[in-house]
Length: 281
Image (cartoon, rainbow, N blue to C red; front, side):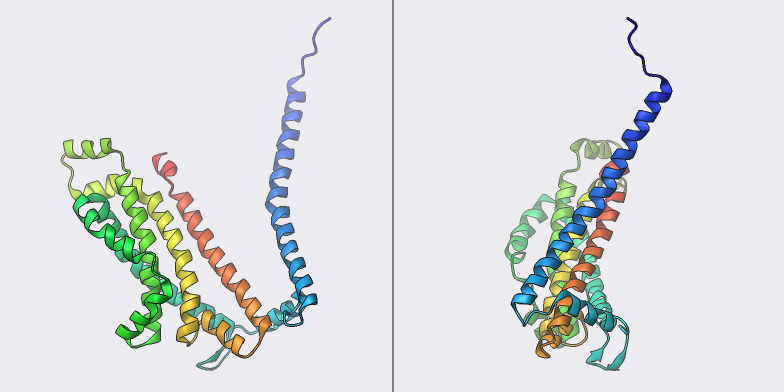
């Protein structure tokens, strides 16, 4: 009996069906698990709101959010501005503190990674200061700068700098020694060593430090603004608490989470685009 041999057309149809199933599975896993997770969260929230009159329901909060975002950029006075201005003010402080931390932390990480003497000298200082609570730095900023805004930026700076220093230094130290030996044989200058050898290899570590730092910066600014006042999402949360406006507090929690998620995902995308594998290829 002659064994059945599938035709090329039959094999192509089967491969197409498998591909379609895999694509459908990918779409399902990308959409439905997050949807069910959010539905579970809202369901628990709705049950809690029924049991407690102090917690507004999801529907009431949604109606408040629609009203809040119908005019996010109104400006009546210095302390009475729309939610859009508060978010932008917080992002501005984060950008300034985070940018200063990157300007200082990344070169310092390269320096620590390249010099064993400096690394041994600075590492104890980093180990001592890194575990300090972010808000412990805020009074020092108020004492030095005599103003709330630069004090908040200082707090972001000092708390964002550690991940960038540590990850950059680790990346430099993990560059294969063969690369450095070749650089010495070719008598490359320090500038060419950094730009042609160290930077491509260290970039994934550096971007990981940057991603960790931006999460810390956004976390710190909310707490700092609660204490310093002015315009910002943290101060807005505290002001709404003083007004006992719980709906707006819950809305602010979602806003803080969404903005933090967007910042982190943006940096993850950058890190993937400049991963070591991509640079190597």
